[in-house]
Amino acid sequence: MQIPTNCFDRKCKWFKGVKNDSDPHREWEEHYFCLAYPDGIPLEITKGDDLHEEVKLGQTGEYVYEPSS
Image (tube, rainbow, N blue to C red; front, side, top):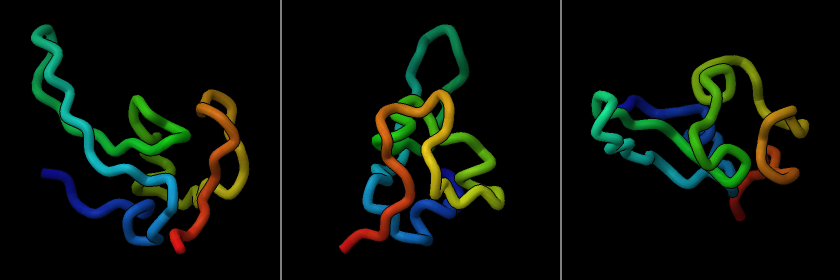
C-alpha cells in the first residue's frame, strides 16, 4: 500500500486513486493515476515539489491541478 500523495492531500479534482498493475511479466505494482496521467502520475508531482499547475509535455488533455468542489 502506498503512502499519501500530494494529489490526494491537495484534493485535486482530477485525482482518481491507485491502480494495480497485474501484468504477469512484471512484479505486482501500484501507482497513482488521474485524468492527466492515466498510466501513472510522475513522481515529481505525487511526491515532489511540482504542483502541476501548468500543462506538461506527455500528459493527457489539458488537466492541471484544480481543487475539488
